Length: 75
Image (cartoon, rainbow, N blue to C red):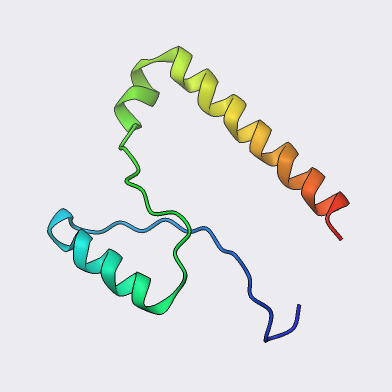
C-alpha cells in the first residue's frame, strides 16, 4: 500500500446522543462517509436469548470466512 492510496476502514464510536448530529457533520467534513448508522445495544438480548446468541456466533464465523476469502483472492 502506498501512502497516496485511498483505503476503506470500518470503525465504531460511542458518542453521547446529544452530540450525534454534530459528530456526524464533522466527520463528513473530513472523510468520505460510506455508511453511518446507529448500533443498537444488544447486550441484554445476547444474555437472555439463545437464538440471538447463535445468530451472533454464525455472523462472526461468516464474517471471518469472508475476510479469509477476500484476503486469499483479492490481489
